[in-house]
Image (tube, rainbow, N blue to C red; front, side):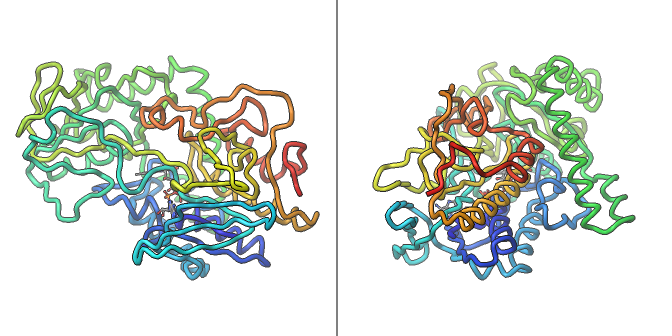
Length: 476
Ligand SMILES: Cc1cc2nc3c(=O)[nH]c(=O)nc-3n(C[C@H](O)[C@H](O)[C@H](O)COP(=O)(O)OP(=O)(O)OC[C@H]3O[C@@H](n4cnc5c(N)ncnc54)[C@H](O)[C@@H]3O)c2cc1C
């Protein structure tokens, strides 16, 4: 088996394969020189998770930290530790960027082409099964909108994806452009030492505070074995998150009011919450932003940070001129303007010589694709922790491979055979970064098994306990 990517998903996939499929061999191809993916790449101040580590952690390795909302370096360490203590690190080929994957039905084999990022040498590998754990965005660069006059600006422009280690922002005037998870993380952290930090957003996002420590989880840990305490906390958080998500979708009005009233309480009665924290869309049309222990609100209240909801007209040498006529002076501008989404690590995929176009593909159970044999991509939830789906996907793959061995099949291919369906976008979010790349991502259908559940409980029933026999899954 070949796994592409040594991030949270790739290391998790390797663990599932080596524990559940002891007779199989695998190799991980990783473009970079490090384990951890996202949690190694992003080094901006305060980088942290925005979901709890009891669900972002693996099902098989209890999260050891005291904080449920954890910092990036601790998550990186957790992924590395998982790789080291299970010998997974010995299976990784670093500096191997996969550029192409070609399936041959005659050989029942994938042939992967990889470019060595250190020597530029082109090498190839074959495998009978391919797991793409390559994440969902381009590592080279984030998304930067075009701003008039940006080239005139004399201050520093920073992209969170490539944070300079030497950046000294103490006492400086900082403008962070954006209102997503990255912006709400960076603003309070920089505000601790910067002169002032302004979060400049075109439109507001839902921002919800949550304690960084989970008292119940820490209590359970004292009274029972770590694995049991972890499993119970994981279930508590899965069910709580599912309940809050379902309630928000069913009752958007009251949810909006509740979130606004909580922000108002934190920021004081005179703060214009309706201008800066009242989005134009309904809760969960886009991912919500979670902040630990109200850190963003505290820094705003203390006057160290502020929010502007406005549009940039142009940059000058020293300022950002806004549509309202306001001018924001800045020494440093941080472009927290989002990711550039990418599917399957940008590799060109072919099946028996025919080009596989991700944008036209139909997803099967949120992991395989109609017409693509022995191929799984590991992809998390948009409304819950990534690893919940990653673990279930890997379990399913192991079941599938055991079943193939049992029936003597070399090839498994999803094939649309039942009633016709309406096709829908894969990512059911309205965020700018999703809309920009909707054509690059596969589609989902309107019925099982072609529809994405976005629900851990439904996926658990389907992927852990559901039958593998399906007229729309062809074993040959
Ligand atoms: C700042 C930030 C915070 C986040 N916080 C959360 C959170 O709190 N909760 C949550 O659920 N999700 C969060 N996410 C989503 C997050 O990406 C996932 O949780 C998870 O880390 C994804 O892991 P992954 O291994 O699938 O992908 P990645 O972490 O992206 O790792 C992919 C790996 O594949 C490698 N790769 C890619 N293409 C190729 C190729 N062609 N050849 C070889 N190697 C390749 C990359 O180098 C990388 O090492 C966050 C994302 C970001 C950017």
